[in-house]
Length: 348
Image (cartoon, rainbow, N blue to C red):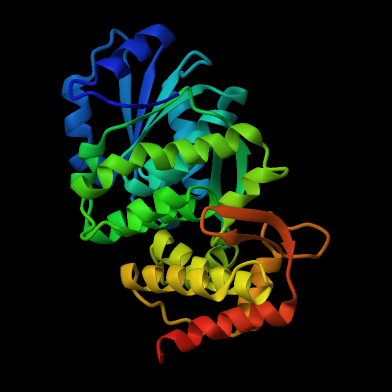
């Protein structure tokens, strides 16, 4: 269930009452503890006892050590299988919280309360949970659906612009792979603000949910959601390995530019739509200098991507605005050319 929360959070309270949990745990990071928890708590009406569990903010904390700490807290506070976890946060909190919930005592229920645009439109939806390990994003995880995804657009006003723009990349991806009208609406926004993007959040969430409902375990069509991520994740992992984190959405924007050009090189898309897509993404997102990384290093990480099989890199590539093909085997030379194309963009 995806639903926008009303101002007094009545729908959340009614749903919790329906679930009748033995105990509630609210997972937050430092940021949502300070900015979002004070909005949630005065509106939380429940007879169930609840505890706040706080982790440090940042992708670097989405790891097995954080998961272990939360499992230990659950154990110490005698959480049983009727306990309920509320994940109040961005993608790190919903990914980590979902993973912890799905594995503790073989699974307790959880609700995602995404507080960032990235979490609302991507991370909180689809039942993928996970943690990072050895600089590889989400390499350990489970498929586990939340009981509900309840979003509150007012939370976006607690974000800085970089975080807002990061989530916007996933919204653009949804338009490119599945809904040309959505892409047009998003790229027509003159200034990106919480208010200007709010009317389009539900549609982005619906697109992802529609795709996931057809292929929960990512055996076929769900793979189109990886557009921009094969190259984007590899670059993101290289920065992470060097101790320099970049926003996920900026890495995805880079990946979408590269993979749009790859779609052109493989003959799936014409020059005109390819140029339109790339120019609009360039207008919205900063250039990321990847000249320090050799193409071979980026390729090595792409080969290690968990979505690949049989020694091939499987790409999801667009064959028009609003349409995408999955399991595309691509010539290695074309991948190198796409990376070189991006590296030269800063000189264009």
